[in-house]
Each structure stands twice: as C-alpha cells, then as structure tokens.
Length: 362
Image 1: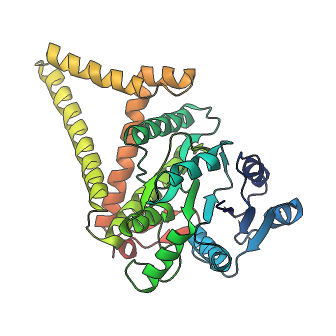
Image 2: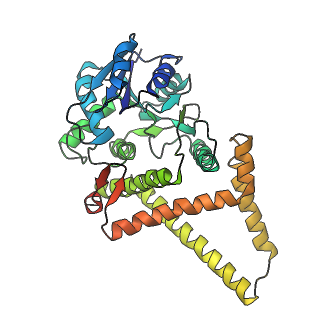
Image 3: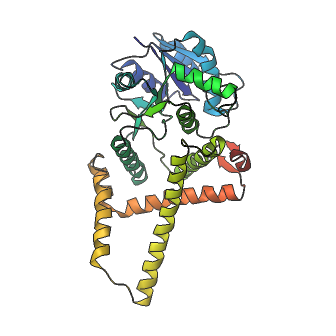
C-alpha cells in the first residue's frame, strides 16, 4: 500500500499545532509518518513535536530566508531520498484541520486516474463569526461549488492541504535543475510569493493532472480584520501575476490569464453600470425596465443558490445582497491595487517581508 508522509510547515505554531497533529492521527487512513517542519520557531513548536511520540517527528530548518517554500525544500531534500516513487507527501498547514476521510478519499481519487500528480483540499472556513469572516466563508463555499461543477479539476492546489506523488515531486526537482521549469533544483520555487499556485502550474506543465475532490475537506482560519484580509489577498494576487510571468504564456497559463482578464473586465463593467445608474438618476432619465429587473433577479438568485451549502447565517447574509456586493468590490479593489503597484514598479509589503515588485514580474 502507498505510504503517506505528512509535513506540517510551522513557524511559532504552538497554539495550533496539537489540533493539526490530532487531525492527522484521526484520519481513517493515517499517515505513516508526521513531520513537523519547524522554521525559525522561538516558541514551543519544536518541543511539542519532539514530545509527541508515536509517528510524529520534527525537522528544524537552518538559515532559511525563503519562507514556507524554503522550509519545505530543506525538509524534502532530506526526506525524498528515503521514499518510494509510489509514496505520497501531504503538506498541511498548522492552522488547518483535515476531515477524517481526507487522505482515504484523496488516495482513492488518485488511484482512479494514474495521471493525477496531486490532490488538493476543498478549503472551508473554520468557525466564522463576524460579517467579514462569514463573507470569506461564503467565498470559499462558492469556490468549492465551482470546483465540483468543473469535474474536481483544481485551479490551484491549496497550501492548506495538498497530497503530491513522490514521483511528481522528483520530476519537478529534475525539471527545475535542468531549467525546464524556473526556480533552481528544489521542489518549491524559493522566490514564489504563492508557492501553492506556482507548484500547481509546475505540475500541470509537466503533464500531471491536479484535482480537488469534493469530499477532501480542510477547515482553515480566515482573516479576522480588514487589514489582514487586504494583505493576504494582495499577496495572492501579486503571487498569481508573478507566477504567470515566471512561466510565460502557454496552454497552462492561458486559463489564468483569461481569469485575470475576466476579473478586470467584470470590475470595469460594474463600475460603468453604477456610473450610468447614478447619471440617469441625477438627470431624471432613470427607468426600471422589466428586462433589466429580470437580469438583476437572476443575478441575485445565483448569489443565494451558490451559497446554499453555507450555514443558516451564511445563507441569510447572502440573501441580504449588500454585504456580498461590498465584499466583491473589496476584492476587486485589491486586484486593481496590485495592478497599479506592478505598473508603477512599487514594492509590495506583507507583514515583516518586503518584496520588490519589479523583481516579481521579471
């Protein structure tokens, strides 16, 4: 039977780490080994892993300056030589908890299709409370619905929990070493702002399929404040643009380019709609036409139906419409902000790290 080795990249995660480990141990198909990758931790993260016992061990990084990607590259450089081609590596964030059948369902889905190189999770929000948190939860529910309707094809292998074939990881390392893929000889590109996005593109360029079955559920934390959400989504958008630039235009990156164009055009169209509406109200020419009322009703119904798998409060929030609209504008504003940053070659800052915008696009 194929073995699964679970890696938990962690930086000062003593509060969240025990729950993440327990979720792995309680899997119906448990990992053969759980490795806590402690990256420059100054709290009890390493101690918790060392004291846990059983199948849990720890790996400490040394001199890592490449964030999560660098930590995983160091751990995988040690672990991969010990693994068989048919083994799997599961990377799961410390702030995420897998549904009990995650690994079993992922392995079953991969067994049905030998072309699958990786299985990503369907991420849902963990205990949202505020309106902002519930809006993120609704966004995740809708994204899960879209993936399910697209035959489980993963657009991005979520960094919260992804299972990857060892053979695929070795193929990536070799392709990077011979410059078929960017990034040097490691598994993860050390300069990628969104290592999960870049890994997805790398796998697809090598011909592997990436899937996210609907039963592979992973619960993850959402951003509690507007500032944290803005920084997270700025990094995601910048990372997407950076990844597309790194890999260039191809059949793999073309869908992502279309998505970027679609988001931009949608934002422009919405802004124009509101400008025209405001002008017609101001000029006294506003007139409610049955056709446009019907269009608005269809749009409203879609927003409610697509959120139906949320809890009762989530459905109610979707039915209110206005929070949904404002949240979409917020995400659109993030995308515009990043495009302006890139155009002006400005620096993008997230937490303690500063990334030169000009470097990310070239």
